[in-house]
Length: 119
Image (cartoon, rainbow, N blue to C red; front, side, top):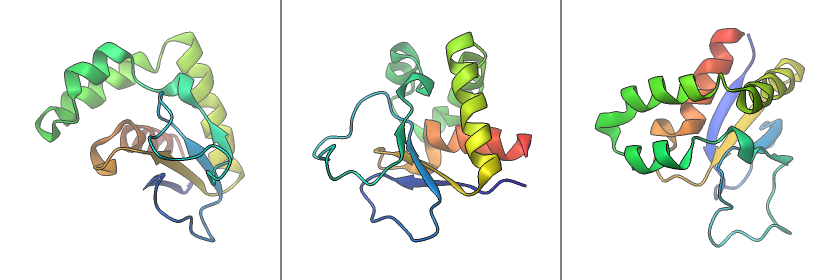
């Protein structure tokens, strides 16, 4: 099974993070691109603006957010991005990064679950 982790992009990287991929649509506030310790920025996989606005990181809406987001991930552009992340996870540890304060109820958590289940 692939090891897929979720971390905040603001946290110091761990030696065993493997490939570090930012999955937010917007660049994190206060983080300089020159000093960001990540391998890729996969912004095309982020939820739509409409879904993000509706969700507003309300933990009570997380289950429905996850359902709607998984549906969005079937669109061609996002499906290609999911396939790319699956390849990265297959090659070793993959750490999905997000600026969200509650990473456990973020798009990164939904993606990690999806990638783990595809093992």
